Structure formats: structure tokens, C-alpha cells
Image (tube, rainbow, N blue to C red; front, side, top):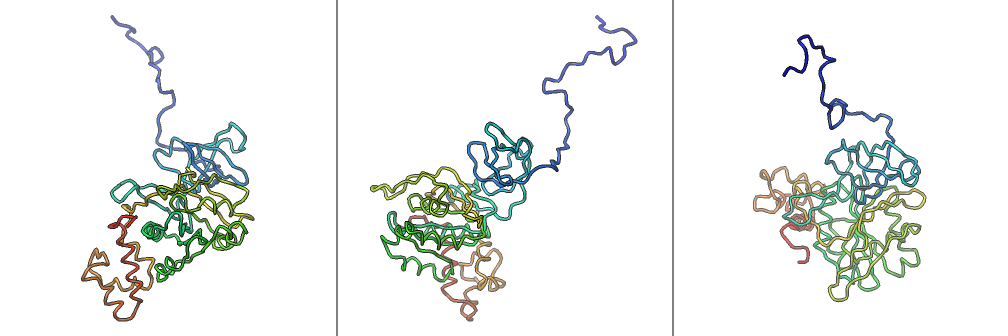
Length: 335
């Protein structure tokens, strides 16, 4: 049965409405040229706290970003309600190019990278000298991750009132890693916090370490107006309990830098690390790699670094330190 006459016009044709909306699809996305600049302070279950000028704004990731992740330390573009008032929500529409990215994997066989923080300048590796015992392999792994990400490492040794720091510092002497040694009493007096604060001025510093080493306690002394929960070390296992569950960026007093407190880790996988990039942290050894065979691991018979050191261009202990770091993927962290 004919529904329309012989001379129908377009106005006579019934068009079924689009259930997904009436706006035509387009690949052209808004540029959001009026978006405000923001700095991501923390991420919690899809909600992000962003510093916009002098106020904190709660935001969510815009749909147009797709699967692109947003992490603490990211510089972002934000639109919507930027008042920071209760029950308001803005949108993050763009993530600016990152200057640095600190990554880790769950273990050395995990193919999935996890971004810890973005745009940091320095990595503070916090380790207790006792209670719990120091884990040098974890320190080595954090150093490799720092070198790979282009971050300057800083070794922070806590609880020096329980054990001396000399032996541990000696094993890292040839790497030239700056360090600060603290005790509980020095933290209470404020002296240790000021020593650490001097190393952080004008920088964005990410703090990493396994649970129970006093990382969050130290952060609380550095930024006393923002107290985070702290835990204790299990007397049976010698491990700390996770009390920091998400990364948080905190401003140092007088705006002299940022501290990013991260959750305690029990492993630091390096599956994502390209060993060829670690050599960049050894400027005295890097020129010697010009004679290395292609894809040299720098720990094989034909490695040119052996002759480079023999000719007196670098300290043999520096080559030993490099090879020790490169071998961390083949060794378990507790060894």
C-alpha cells in the first residue's frame, strides 16, 4: 500500500528520530582556547583535585580525552565551574606535554606500565636504616627508574638513631647520589626537616619508599599544616602497613617547591626500562660506549667500557656501579 502520493516532497517524508541525539557527528573537537591552567594535586576514583590559580577545584576527565590517563603532577587545561565551591565539578579537557614521567611495573614480567607521577624534577628515595631493614635492591631499582625518567635522585635515610648509615652510604658513594640522614629526634627538633627542605627548594620532588620507612612522617614534618595518616611496622613480618593510599602533591612553605607523597611500595618492576637509557646518567662512561657492539648490554665480553676504564678514563667502581644497576632486573629485590 502506497503511503505517499506520486508527487511527494521532502516535507512529506517522515524521518525517524535519532535516539542518540539530533546533533550531527563530527570529528572536529572544540579547542577550549579559554580553558584555565591547572596542576593536578591528587586523583581519587575518577575525581581529580586540581589547583587553579589559588584555589582547588574538583574535576573529572572529559570524554574527549578517551583512555588518556591523568596523574598527579600533570599540567592540564580545565573548563567549567572553576569556583571551587562545594558540589561543583569542572572538566579536564587537555593534558599538556609532560617534562618527565616516573613509571614502574608491578614486577619484571608485567607488560603494563603504571605512571607514578608526572613533571617531577627529583626522586627522593626514602629508606629506613632499621625497623624495617634497608633493601638495597629496591634502592637500586628506584635509581634506575629515576635515571630512565631523567630525574635527579636523592637518598633520604631515616631512623639513624637505630643503626648507622656509613655502610649503606659507602655502597652508593661512587654513584655520587646526594643524601640526607635523619633521626627521630632530629625530626622532632625540626633540624632534619630543614636539611631535607634545603634539597627540595624550587623543585617538584616525588617521595618513594616501601611501607614503614617513615616517608609520610617525614612529609608531615616538611608540610606541617597538612598531616597525613601514618602507620607502624609489623613486628612479625618487618613490613609496614599501607596508610597512604593515593599520591598527593603538597606545597612546601612559602611556595618553595612541591612534595609528592606516594603510597608505599613493596616492589618496583622495571619491565618498561630500556637499559640503553641508564648509561645517560653516567657521563664519565657514556663516551666509552662508542666502541660497543650494537645492542650492547654493557656487561658482556666485547663491551668497550672495559677498555675505556683500563685506559684511565673512568673509575672502575663507576663501571661496577653501572653494571650493578643494570643487573637489577635479573635479581629479586630482597636478594
